[in-house]
Length: 186
Image (tube, rainbow, N blue to C red; front, side, top):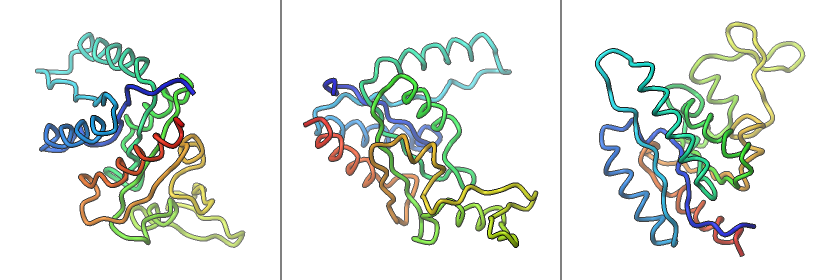
């Protein structure tokens, strides 16, 4: 494996009101592990949705993703039963670039550790006569007993699920991913 020096940290942290404090905590943990943390920033809020500014931000973000040697993906459910959409996109980009990824998910209870259970709790689900889980629209819900969909779960070298009272700020999963990354690099 190529030596890992820089680590992309994807997750919903950029949206927190104290995102700068959270980013500092993440950087400190990565620094302790001998890694440079690449922590994504939010696009600055403009007056009225400037498309050119948005494209420039996107290009800069893609360049940063290409610079990362590996990624830690925070798949904590955000604004619903699944991870932040930008986080999922970034995980896909890293996978497409062949970068090793490690992931974690913070949940408030063990009951929310499974994907279908979160969909059921947040949106509603029905087990049909063929024992297939369906949402309220009748669409099938992916159910393999995993914490996330197969494509997100399968790409991560390791995916840790942490039960915590503070799912958006708990960094236990990041610490575990850093430990796993150190073992993976040996």
